[in-house]
Length: 367
Image (cartoon, rainbow, N blue to C red; front, side, top):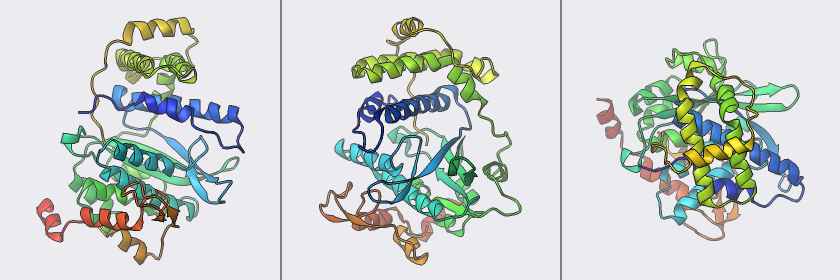
């Protein structure tokens, strides 16, 4: 089982990353700090509070150099670059990249589809847990979302990550309502590589409608986020101060431990609705005291959660993403044609061939 799901070294690395010349450094650092804050809150919500729902937004952004439009979060830069960095990082450590490759290819498809679709388009994307021997638990994440139009900020992609427990067969049956090709999904990577988009209909017009349609009885609610932010915000601010000051990895890990242990301590209060949405004004002296008191205790380990062939699907729909000359992050081929995830055509085909199972396997699973 992996000892942690929130890796502090990434915060320092991302915070200190080069800033494009055309952007104001103060704006970039502010957005990076807000990104760290949101990531920690979502991590705490998922692993330490155990919430079922969350919500975030992607936006459309145009690359200043290439003119290409891509999906981005609050911080400048393509979201798909995160998947690419994850593949590269795991490759360097000699770890499997099968899930990361599938996620990257799946996001690549979803991004292309959403950028070329009209407002109100909906999607559902399932991330089942990986193998238990790799440290994954029982939880899946089903991402549901929709293109929405903001009168002030333009088009955005609303995303609701929905935490649930379901077998691959249950996921397959659920997705079959939205696409016939879901019957071909046999492995976790099949689901990851194939998000499904569709237009609103009489029954389903919003992401909440999708949740209700697939059998979720609890109403969508993310009030926990405001309560949690109000209770631990001062600690996260202290952590960000450490990132900003280039603190050691050990010091960052101790502060992360303290934040997690403190959240575990107040978990029942957050769930019960105690606390408000106003950030705490407790000073940094109090934050440092909590870091000192709770930082040396390691929190309980947290387990990870969460058809048609890849190339064949693109051929059938006459859709292919743009390729460019570069280095493949999977096979390390130099100067070859790679897609937006920096994966070459041969590795895409190899991945697809490895992940496809014969139809008899589907019958065996279904029986």
